[in-house]
Length: 379
Image (cartoon, rainbow, N blue to C red; front, side, top):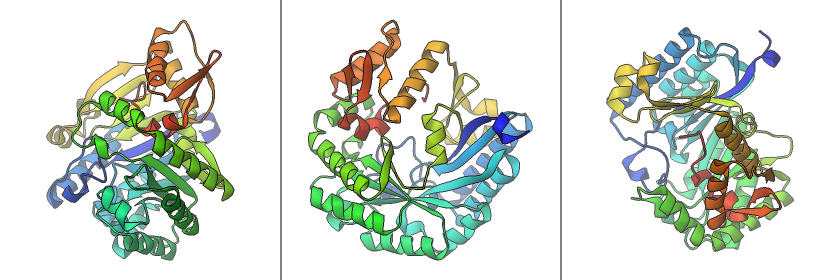
């Protein structure tokens, strides 16, 4: 079937493994695991088995994946050959669009000849590089397991291996960060010839917190300085030819992110792995976060789901409204929808959205904190 007649979707492979030393720099990510080499290898086997089983039973009939992203904060710590083979298996066995971008999230110190050679087996053509900052003091403040030299070396390796797209991920709101230091980091990322720059809020206060709503409120209450830094970053990047595509994403003129474009337009999204979230065909499927259960049951996809929730019309409208907000649009608010009213009233009370007439839009604080806001129908 021609791609133009098929439903557009995105595909994520969640590999939530991290080094023990990364607990601070990756604070606030979903469930994470360390594990030895054997545990990591078994997980990748299970991930490949889940993909194959889902394909065999026709889960992707009528679907075309426009982009593939390997996520989890630091999936690049996995064996490069194995990771490359996983992406190759997805390209071979799943309905990926012609020219589908495959992007891997990576820590700088893991980007080297061995990893890039391995990833090339899956034709990985984009890397989301966790830069954080180019200042050693700020890297120390976020608990980075790498230094500024590692960032520069990673960029050199990506250039040497002709990786088409560099997405630089930086952090705003780091204790001690100033407009001047932020501009130097941004200028460095522009100089790296990044096609995309993604901005994350500093997540330090999330460490050890089990109550995300309270954490989010605490962030919102103390976000003024970080919001000013975020506004300064927006102005700087606009002057460098970057368009503000979504809350956290800035794209160089002529570039794009098919993954983000599809998500912002409310397309279905499929995710494999531990703690995975899929929204497709009107259902939310949330996979187990228990490692042993996942590895044992991965060849029977239904067995890995912790819960399946049907998305009714009202829930779908709210999800699509959030997609539009994430795309920096002003969204009409349905006064007769109590779920939407309660959701946006909560955000408004924290200064994350503002109302004008019957519309809502994100404030600067809301844009910066959007990655931390639990999204409807996304787990």
